[in-house]
Image 1 (cartoon, rainbow, N blue to C red):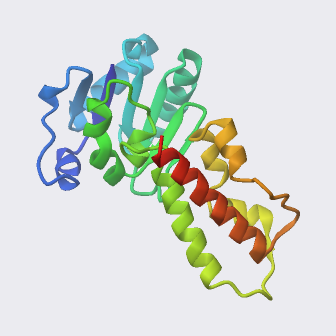
Image 2 (tube, helix red, strand yellow):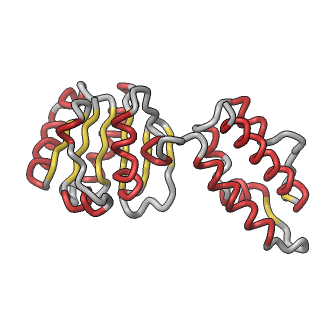
Length: 218
């Protein structure tokens, strides 16, 4: 069961050509508008058991009273961790999706673009909210496109620190998406040191292409 706490209905409608008909989906409860959102969050802070029936809690990061919102999210994060639930925080400030310790952070546009896909799938994965139906393929395609563009414009006299390179291309994020053996395939014939060479980037690009082909052909 999913709980969506959203204080602005126009945020839902603004990212869809049509409004989402939540009545079609018995697996989600939607709390709308400030008064109702604040009331249920007050109840949750008084008694965390209020949310026990939900496996996934989706909430905007700027919701609730300004002087209480920091406390709210600390309690929510501790709660989902202790109960092995999932918390989805969405905000326009989240330029990149991130999933760590049962907490997914995404933009409102991604949430409402992919929410119905997530609700319609019998065996949905929480990362569908960030990447859509092909949640384990789209990130690979996005990184490959970015990597190839970087290679095309790369100055061979330039020195690229590996840690910065890893961060810039969100390589560590792939650990939460790929199986261990798939992740290792990306590093076939590679042993990165402190800096990344053009040849190593080309090998990495080739490995991405191979993994994408393998996943598409399954």
